[in-house]
Each structure stands twice: as structure tokens, then as C-alpha cells.
Length: 170
Image 1 (cartoon, rainbow, N blue to C red):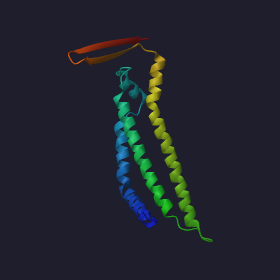
Image 2: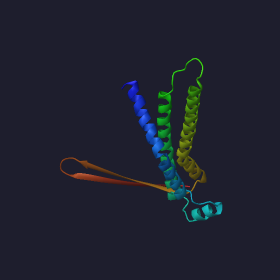
Image 3: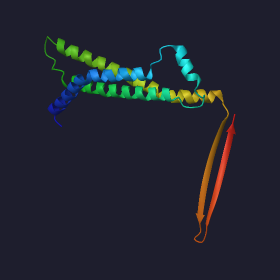
Image 4: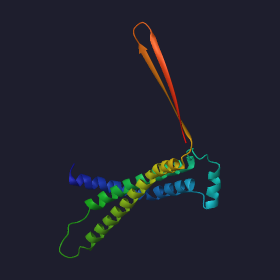
């Protein structure tokens, strides 16, 4: 693909982002309101009191998924903006390079924002590890069961062996 084609494609993507920016922000705002509507810590505490300790919390998991989706979309948009700015920086000339300087500064801001979002995405993924570590530290009694079924066929008859194993830990 030629350089001009890349430039045209990046311009199309940037224009689409600009035209859809208000819809994107409205979607993020409604998602935020849907998943993070509790404003007082006491309300949050009451809403989680009914949860079983070992059960997944569907509210947290839905909020985590929605947050990850929003961050991934924003990272994709930042990538498209970065491509656009990079491909449309004019040549540096003697004197009067103010426009170039502004574009390079804008590019730096986009890159810094994308880096921050990427780190946030990594932190969101650590929720499951942190939860597992906390559950492990509680050393709650648990039961692990497994069942194995083995069939052997010697041509004349079929033998089936069923093995059940249950492990208890405290």
C-alpha cells in the first residue's frame, strides 16, 4: 500500500472518530452510570452483604468487563489518532515550524494517554489474581471433586472403570 493510501485511510478513520466522539462519550457515561451508580460507601457495603463470600460477584464482573471494553476501544481510537498525526506531520523547514511543534506535542500527549490506559488495562486484569490470592489467604475449607471414566474394549466385552476422588482442604 502506498504512503498516500495510508494517509487517506488514517484521515478517514480520524474523521470517523471525530464525528462519533459525542456518541462514544455518551456510551461511556451511560455505562459508568449503569455499573457505578452507588455513591456512598455505606450503600456499597449493604449491597455486598448479601453476597456469599466464595461466589462470584456479578456486579463487579459486569463492571470490570464494561471497563475493559471501554479502555480497549479508547486504546484503538488513540492508535488511529496517533497514525493520523504521524502521517500528516509536515516537513520541518527553516523557521516557522510552530505547526510541526504543535503536532509533535499533540502526538506526545496521545502516546502518554495511551500508555496510561494500557497500564489501567493491566491493573483491571489483576483483579482476578488479587481475588484468588485473598481467597487463598483466608484458607477457607474447600472440597475438590473429580471423576474419571475409563472404558476398555477387548473386542468381546467392554469394561468400564469409574474412579471418584474427593479432596478436602482446610
